[in-house]
Every structure is written in C-alpha cells, then in structure tokens.
Length: 349
Ligand code: F6P
Image (cartoon, rainbow, N blue to C red; front, side, top):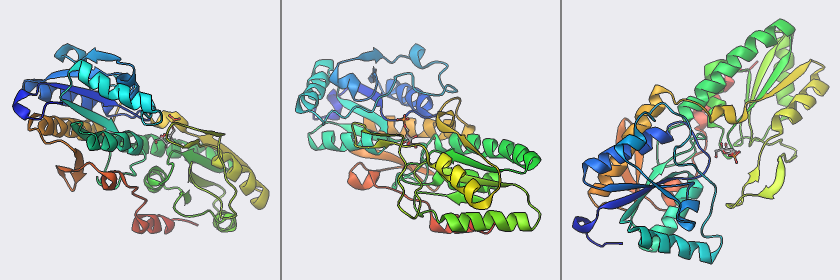
C-alpha cells in the first residue's frame, strides 16, 4: 500500500459477518464522502471472501443511489476468516495489490474487525466500522442495527401480550444475543416483559416459575418471558442448534426458548407457547436511528481515509462520533449494564 496520503486514491469497502439494517447507509455515506475527497471506491463482495477470490463491484454515485432505506448489504456478506488458511491470507494481500487498493473500510463485528486488526499488523491501511445487532462491542455506545432489532422485538412482545392475555398462557420469546443480552433487556423493558433472561446471568428455573406463579396468584393469568438465544440454564444444560462451528469458532445457537417453554409448562402447569424471532430481527428497513448512525459512521470512516488516518475504528461516544484505535481492545465484549438489567427486574412478578 502507498505510504503517503497524497498518492492514495483507491479505497475498498466490505461488509462481513451477520448482516443488519444500517449497513447500506454506511456504504452510501462512505462512498459519497470518499468520492467527494477524490477517491475511487471499490465494493468488495461478501466480506473477506471478496478479497480471497477478487470479487468486486465498482461503487459509484449510481450504485449507492436509493440504498439508504434498504436492509441487508448491497455488497453481500459472509463469515469468511482468511486467516484460517495461510494461502487465503496471502491471496488477500495479492488482491489488495492487484486492485491497487490504498485503503480498506471494513464494516463488521468482533470477527470481521478481528481480521482487520491482523491486517493492520501486516501493514494494510484499514479503517473499521463497528456493526452488530447484538450491540456487544465495548468501544462504542451503540452499533447500528441494534435499534431496529429492539423495535422489532418490542413489537413482537406487544403482539404476544394480546394473545397471551386472551388465552391465559405463558409466552416465551427467544431473541438474538449470542454473548450479551442487550436485545432481550432493551426489548423486554420496552415491551413490558415479566421475565428477561440473558447470557450474562445463568437462568434459575425455580425463580422464573416462582415469578409466573406469583403473577397468577395476584390474578395475572398470563406472562411474557424474553430469553436471549445465548442464555443458559444454571444447571449447565447447554443448548445449540448444531455442534458444527463456523470459521470463527462459533456454534449455531437456538433452542433455549423451546427448552424453557417445556420446562416452564411442566413446572407451573400453565399452558406455554414459544416464539423464536430469529432473522426477522436482522431483516428489513433500518429505523431512523440506525440510518442516522450508519450515515454518521460512514462519513467519519471516509474522513479518516481521506485524512490518511488508518488503524482506527469509528465509534459513538455520547452523541459524538469519534475515532478510537482499531486493536484488540476496540472489539472486546460489552455485556449488559447490570444497572439496566436490575431495573428490569423491578417489573418482574
Ligand atoms: O452476531 C449477530 C447474530 O445475529 C447473533 O445474535 C446470532 O447468534 C448470529 O448472528 C446468527 O447468525 P447467522 O444465523 O447469520 O449465522
């Protein structure tokens, strides 16, 4: 890569890991601002796979026109880890050279940005944009996609309330959240859930059933239980959809909702139904908050590129978009604020 900013003119943009609403606003904003700064913009398709296989698309004003409200990513995404095989890591470097890329904007979560950190150490000019609907990256107050997911989950909880009340049932809703229960906590508070279960706190089934029974005893014939997919029972029962690991070593989660549903029904005697919200949380149009955050992140990332300030990640701190070092610390885990989780318990029972 060119060592001086004055000679630089070509930047690649990629989106890696799970998609989420707000990716297209980042791509649009970064492309427009980079172009405004005199840079050519290349879209790398399907995350790091696009650099392994040299699969690209030109990002022009026309290409990014109309994508602001669109969910997903026009670039495609994948969970490719180019450091799994040395030949893939070499191909990434070769593609960067053959495309003449002077810089990269990598939009992704812990895994995608983890690859970016390794590339920075190899001398690649990277700017990172944090992305995850799970909102579990420590060096930014929020990531885009999270607000949309919380609103979808909240609406689902609202809808479950009316049917739960009519049928006098327990409704368990499983939402996303692999390592941290931000979606469960925030959607649960916003939707008035009776029990919120998150990966940070092992589930005590007796406590959960006690809350439900107490509600029944005071005349509330229904209850709503929100569980993050990564939540686990105190007795250590592990739940995973598949034992197979992805390229970054993660199991495919899913199943805690159904496990809880049958155990709660068994233990309380109350009829229980389970809803697994799944990828509905990741699909569709971003909220205004996510469109604005994505736009601000994209503009800031482009400004860092144009200014030749690499090895940084854009971040929301308070109401300001700032740049922080893109290193292991930037992608460390941010678990749910215990104060917020405690607050939610005031409404249990
Ligand atoms: O990391 C975001 C996330 O949505 C997690 O909450 C979830 O476990 C995972 O992605 C599911 O990803 P996929 O089904 O795309 O492999």
